[in-house]
Amino acid sequence: MEIARHWRARATRYRLEGQRHRHSGVVRFPPQPPALGEEPDVWEPAPLSGRGELYSFSVLRQPPAGYESFGIYAVGMVRLEEGPLVTAQLTDCAEEDLAIGMPVEMVTRRLADTGEDGVLVYGYKFRPGLR
Amino acid sequence: MSGVYLIGAGATPVAEHYGRSLADLASEATRAAFAGLPEFAAHRVGALYVANALGDRLAAQGHLGAYLSAAVGLRGVPAVRVEAAGASGGVAIQQAVQAIAAGAAEIVAVLGAEKVTDQLDDAVEAALALASDAETEALHGLTLTAQWAMLMRRYMHEHGYGPEAFAPFPVNAHANAAKNPLALYRFPINADKYRKAALVASPLNMLDCSSVADGAACVVLASERVAREVAAEGVPLVRLAGVAVATDTPALALRADPLDLAAARASAHIALGRAHLGLSDVDVFELTDPHGIAAALALEAMGYYEPGAAPRHAADGAITPTGRTPIATAGGYKARGDVAGASGVYQIVELLRQLRGEAGPTQVDGARVALAQCLGGVGATAATCVLVAER
Image 1 (cartoon, each protein chain N blue to C red):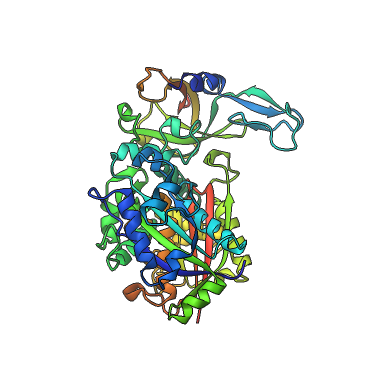
Image 2: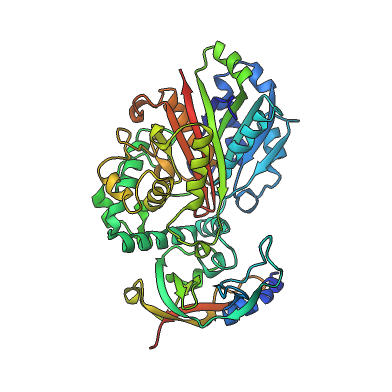
């Protein structure tokens, strides 16, 4: 049973919530605990726009256990407008549509097959930008 | 850290050993490692480090220090499993070197053992993926292969290569493995076959992806005093001149430049520094090379080639046994086989052969200094070991 694990991550997975440094303004994703020597609350929650461009991608033909229902699927790293890189699945696109540098935007989709505990795991993916 | 020596090594073939258990494989490797040593060596083992990445999930056995120490005939010896994903073997070597350098033991055995074929490929892929960041990578269906594939595509984009530029790496690995009786894939391939191979995780194709398989390798380390005793009985000496481990974030996306394997660079430089040697002194390399891109990035991170230059040098033959930076002389991860947590120990087995001049058709002429580097995840742990032959 991993219900608590998925519940804990809801802000990150559903809202793409990262963190902003209160002094420098630097934005990071995902949220992380403060480092040694940092003020405990120096990183504040910061929802991200979900817009960015494709840094790199791959199309998997041998999925790991728990992802069989997706068949062949694309994954990518996205450079968000706010700066951080995010790794996620790419959706609503054919392999030949993908190119490094193309604009993409976040959508919420099912991330994995439904496991033995029956939990539907939702989270962010990216699709080609609609602008 | 001077005064730690490599006095014995042995390994099983890398294969799909359906008929053999983890304990069987571990026993064979350990016996082989001690086979050339005087009888007292086995009785004076002061510690056993077991390198294993996936035992809990794939071999259905935990507590591998105690379990395998008993299985190989070292019952009672202090024993612990070292887990650092694909770098487990290199980190176990580092632990063993520290134990001897600290005076805690005179002889230490490092046993890399991995049993993966009791599970199907998709379960193996899922287990391997836990070496990445579980929440931000593995949960999204990313495999380690997919991560390397994304680095390869980005590298091609930044440096203007097509995928065929990486063919020299698996071609060299297979050419060498064809001459290694312990290798998983003992057949040559060529650039034409590479170009036609089916995609696994684009742009990586089947001939640019290692297979994870079963195997065990064991090396025996000793203090200088014991090493001299053994040398008196005719065993050629190889010194572990420098070892170092460095880490980086498992999540690729959290690195300033994902194409820069910073931990690989740091561990190589620190290990060479401890050995009082430079990169140009190294005659033969063992790298984590499940894909050409991995070998290219490691050579560039260490500083041997400028960013973007490694595939060009590979095309000119630099990575073959007669080249400037020979790698994968036993077949590497690609063709000897990827043995997960045991791979770092297999690397040392091969380098001992090289430094003793016993590597036969893939011998690097006059090899005196060797460097082994193994990576966990996509370079999140890097362990580097520099070996020097004493003649």
